[in-house]
Length: 264
Image 1 (spheres, rainbow, N blue to C red):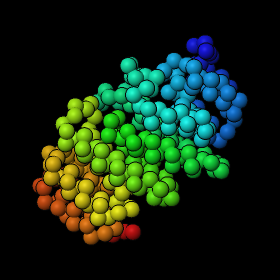
Image 2: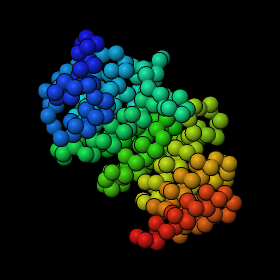
Image 3: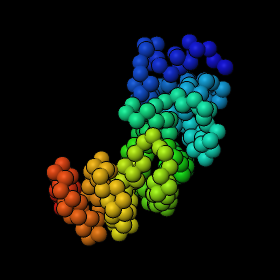
Image 4: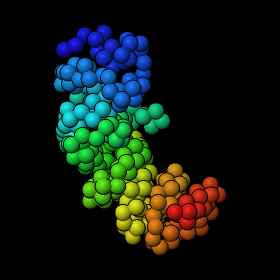
C-alpha cells in the first residue's frame, strides 16, 4: 500500500509537482504525459483506502484506461460490495447523498475526450450499461444521462438499458422507497437521450411523471428540456400540455424547448 504522501502526490500534483485539484490533473492528462503514473494508480485502485480507490478509478476511467473501466463495471455490478459500502466517501452537495457513482459517471463522460483506441468504445458501452443498472439506487443527477449523449452510436447501443433504468426507477418511486435524492428528476434526465431515439416512448414516460408528480417543478422543468430534443408529435403534445399547468417558469422552459425543436 502506498504512503499517504505518495498517494496525495499521485492524485493531486501535476507533472511539475505543483499541487492541483484532481479534475485539473485529469484534464491535463487527457493530452498525455502522465503515463508513468498508471502503474501506481492501478496499485492504488486495488489496495488503497476506499476514497483513494474511488479517485484512482475516476482518474483511470477518465483517461480511458481499461483497469478503470473494469473496476467501474465491477463496482456497479456488485454495488453492495463497493469499498465505501458502510461509510460513503463522497457526497452530493445539496442532498448529502452518496455521490460516488455520479463521480464515476462523470469519469465515463470525460473519457470521450480521450484519443480513440480499439477497445475504448466497447468499454464505454459496457460501463454505461452497468451504471444504468443501478440508476434507480444511487444519485446520478444529470451526469449519466449526458454521458449517454456523447456519441450517437453508443446512445443507440444502450437504449434498452435506458428504458430498463426508467422502469426500475418508476417502480422504486411507486414503492415509496426512502431516498436521499430526487429520483423523479433523474428519470426525467434519462428522457434526454430517449427522446432522440423513441419519441412515443419518451412522451409516455413523461406523461406518467407529470401525472404522478405534478408538484415537482424541478422534474417538470427537466422534462421540458428533455422533450425539446424530441422530433415527433407525441413529445410536442406533451410539451404543449406542460404549458397548461400554469407554472410561469415552466411555460418559459416549454417555449424555449419548442423553439429549439423548430430551429433544427
